[in-house]
Image 1 (cartoon, rainbow, N blue to C red):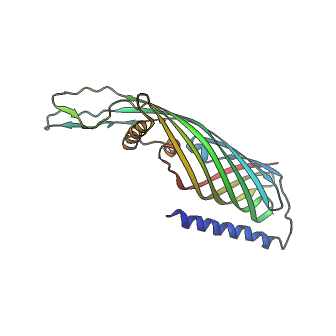
Image 2: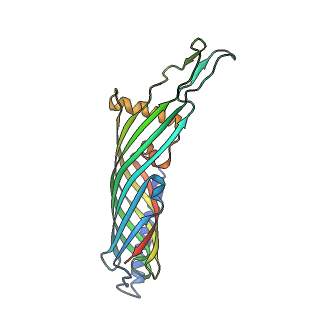
Image 3: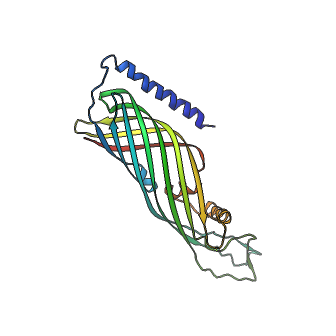
Length: 261
């Protein structure tokens, strides 16, 4: 799988970053600590409806610990002109589509803890290249409201395709996630304490989903919702991750703005 070469490359780069500590230590056994703590806000998570606040704290000459708390909140909508396809006979048949609108409300949380090891530093820790190992845990709830628009058609010339599901798929989706991984990154700090933190790396995550839909069992609701959404709607990045993301290899990365103190 592609994730394994990526994991090996990240681990190799992490080893290079950490090995840089021994080279830097020739100049200074204990590098200067520029700031004891930093607060950070993500500049990329908001695309998925996430709002993250991180706190990084120096815990050793070359090491820091970081805690990230994320709130999830997003309201989005989409539409489809072809929820069910009609079958028609002859060119003179009336050929309607069945349009629908889908509104989604998403809320939840995530918590992530990480330990960083700095290799090459510029003016001092925590300013420079680092490797990080992290654990994460989170839960998200999505409420979906679908509205099928009324259409007029001639029942003598038009029939709906066999198996077409014409009821609205109003449902609730509960998602629970956990994961762990490695990242490599670079943190750049200015004299004023403002800075940027960029990182990327592979991870493994576990995802469990529970679909709740009136009149159906969770497994029936899962099959109905998946078929409708995957075939007829284009979801934004936030809900898409929760409906389509699977257990297994994944990637993480981001860009944060930091304020040191």
